[in-house]
Image 1: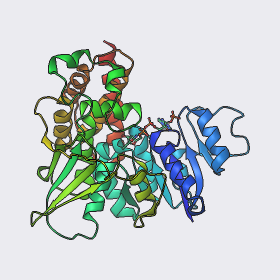
Image 2 (image 1 turned 180 degrees about the vertical axis):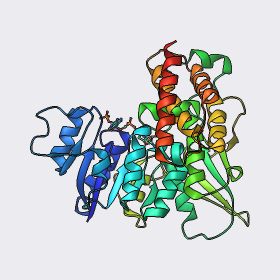
Image 3 (image 1 turned 60 degrees about the vertical axis):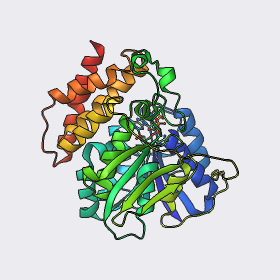
Image 4 (image 1 turned 45 degrees about the horizontal axis):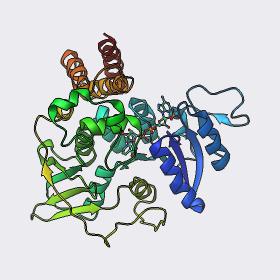
Length: 372
Ligand SMILES: NC(=O)c1ccc[n+]([C@@H]2O[C@H](COP(=O)([O-])OP(=O)(O)OC[C@H]3O[C@@H](n4cnc5c(N)ncnc54)[C@H](OP(=O)(O)O)[C@@H]3O)[C@@H](O)[C@H]2O)c1
């Protein structure tokens, strides 16, 4: 039986992780659950899964009587934990991820911001302390699956992108995009922040950075291809020109389950199957240059390294929230991020404090910019 902790249990990935646990009740013991502010749902989850440890931002006096209230940073290190699912949103996942690796745990990492911020440090902790990072995000998971059993030269990692809701929108309409419109993702149902990141294609740049660190592949060998059907989740081209693709319905429970049971693939009737009884066309297009300024800004910050990616991630988090709160427009998101990155005094980023300080500074600066 695998003993797990789920950080971010009330979110989109956290709830789908618990769907898998529910489907394989004999395989898991839930040792701890951590959430933010959704106390009602956390209470329901606690009742159903009876974890020993619980955590949330502002614990109400009575909700969890008789339970141990344990910080996320400590929960991931508990001796009776085998695997940690990090399904938090934003930079808050960095320290728990590092702590889990330091304690030698297996970390199923959905939360992409920590690896964007500090990918080098996460990989260093993984090799130094013996923990492991398993990708959950569907594109890195697809690459991981394609690389399984391969010890061959990689020519290219091809990350697929749906292109989001504004792939074909006339550029002059982008300024007037509302949060409601940007929240309509054509193929995936996700949390609000990642849905906006998908509309700006920031999310795709995050995946490029994530992939670079997870698989130690040079930047110039990572490409993005627009594939609106979201059926192929990514591809790997090997030295002989052969291309392997991982396909499946756009359902996050598939890569979640793969990370939880790796290396096994267990049948799960809850996950829909690829429908080959209907005629379908799969298409590939190059990304249109200039359409998605967030993508270009972010990949450039990733390549510059140091603490630029931490400043990028923090300023994006603030700018996206400001857009959702209707404080700034859709096309202001890259402007805020660009300004923060231009002003950022990047540090080498060899210790966690450098990344946390860059995150703090960029958050404050982006808040100033979005309030002005
Ligand atoms: N959703 C997807 O399909 C998908 C796909 C690939 C990758 N990802 C990545 O996975 C991560 C999670 O995405 P999501 O869509 O599941 O996000 P989400 O629905 O917004 O859920 C975020 C979770 O984190 C919790 N949380 C936020 N701030 C917290 C804090 N300060 N302390 C403790 N808990 C906190 C939230 O708690 P409350 O709700 O209780 O406040 C919630 O449980 C993101 O990094 C995203 O990029 C998501």
